[in-house]
Image 1 (cartoon, rainbow, N blue to C red):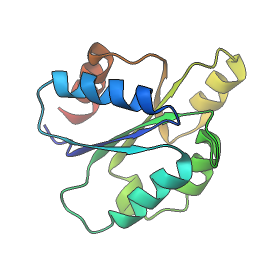
Image 2 (spheres, helix red, strand yellow; image 1 turned 180 degrees about the vertical axis):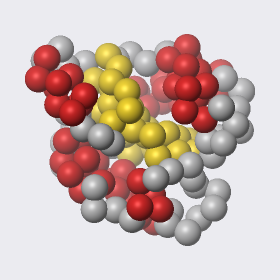
Image 3 (cartoon, rainbow, N blue to C red; image 1 turned 60 degrees about the vertical axis):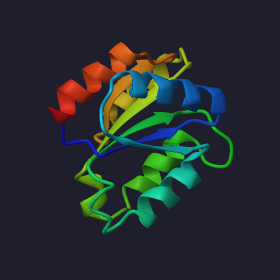
Length: 133
C-alpha cells in the first residue's frame, strides 16, 4: 500500500476519533493526522514538505468548519506546492444535503470523492483500494 498518511479534517473531534478507529480496523501501517479546521490542515501540509514519510496521503475534508471551512481550504490548497498536490487525494465528507455542495464538489478538480457522513471502515477500505493499491 502506497498511502503513508491520512489527514482527517473535521471540526468535530468525535468524528475525527471515530474515523481514526475505522482506519485502525483496516490494520494498515499508516499515520493518521487530525485537524479541526482548514487552517490547521494547511499548516500540517506545509510543515510536511520534504518529509518522505508523510506522502502520499488521503485527506478527508469536512465542508462546514469554523476558522476555515472546506471550500476556503481548497482555495488555499491550490496555492500549495505541486509536490503536495500531486500526492494527495481529497475526499469531501459532509452532513450537508445541499445539492449545491455536491455540484460544487464535482466541479472541483482537487476533490476525488464526495461522501455523506458518517464514514465507515468499508468506505475507507474502498478509498484506499481505489487510489492507493
